Image 1 (cartoon, rainbow, N blue to C red):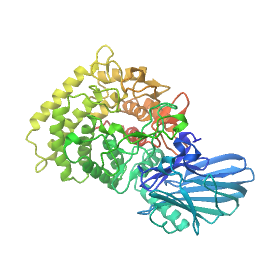
Image 2 (image 1 turned 180 degrees about the vertical axis):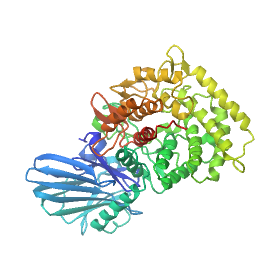
Image 3 (image 1 turned 90 degrees about the vertical axis):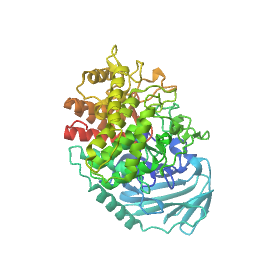
Image 4 (image 1 turned 135 degrees about the horizontal axis):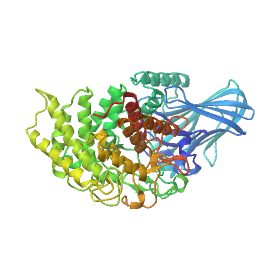
Length: 594
């Protein structure tokens, strides 16, 4: 059975990641890309679906898992009956390779150890053929092969490749995993000490570029490293999370594949990277965005694959039981075919923010901007599926309308601020008038006088935490009476144990049974509002509460189950870490957005 979600740490090579529990089991890895089939999938199944375990076979007294400084190298000290061992796990960054290195060192006494290596391809559904090689074993089936090498004695078994060995003080055992296409030979062995030193230096050098020097630097730095680890280096895309089907409700059906790149994260991502000094990464993401959304605006999707592809066909893996029985396990995401107005606001705001933050312009950005403006003008009055990708039918969602307004507002600003020789647009007067028309309609139709709140959609009575973004969008200031009363209504109805739900699932707007946990990004948004409204003490208290929910390695999932007091949802979640960075910046600068 898999560990609790918050018990995992992440290592990565900027093309994929592996999740390793604090008990030393590698339970999830897709190779060679984030969106490849998993070769270790016990996270959403059982041991038979693939894992790589390294564990003492004596009683364990204490474990201490941590990252080595500002890196993605995990160190775990395990104090056992008879001694102490240290695990060091990392993935080297080598173009064209996909490797995991695991090191066991004896710190004190001697500890008997067991290793079980059970690769299973196709998300744990394909048991490979295991062949002995000169330095270890190769497991292969279909297009995939993985090779395990080590100096320790290993043997095949019905479970996989196993080894039993003892680590004494001063001993060092090295194990190397390499994925490769089954029609090719395994890549050469690596010099483990050299790769460890190189990986350590690469991460420390990258972290040293961070320009954020506020009081929450540790939390911000770990979130930035997490975002870097979730970046697919060849294209600049950032996946929402490296996992699929970790449940939003334990035992429920709200299980989705998040190994794709969402446009809703675009402006947040750009701002977080630029504000912290990572211009190259921001440019890479901006350029990916422009490539992915190129073409007819009618064809713009809410999410794309790592290369900008649009075919994310969703299907279910009936062979897998799901995380703690949470079924179905889904691969792909049908929400990619939804119509969401908010993506146009995200794209235009990203183009605008890039210019404001001093990024070099791109001709594609201006071309895209002009095409998007005409499209938004034509479609903004249509109902859509909303920011939360509901499957219960389209509505005139309030936040979608506000995001459409953002698209027009930022376009007007972009044109007006371009100056002589900048972007020319003969329809500027029309855009200004459209911006006012949209603003007036939203205020009239989305605000419910009886509830004194902006509701989830026109004519409805349900609330939605996305209304917390109204000040950050620049639609209304934080001190507007309508915004203040909306926040009060959200505090009354959507806050559970101090954390914020996206919406009340009992209204069944999303078309799904069951419920979900508190959405961590929404909880950060409430802290943002407190900061914008000058309620600094409340903002700091909520932010500190949220920081305390991180696991010992500083990682956050998508949601938090307040009843069970545990993280739930896909992990680690880029949206949660982006929101953390945004709140830390708001508290550090005390500046209103825009």
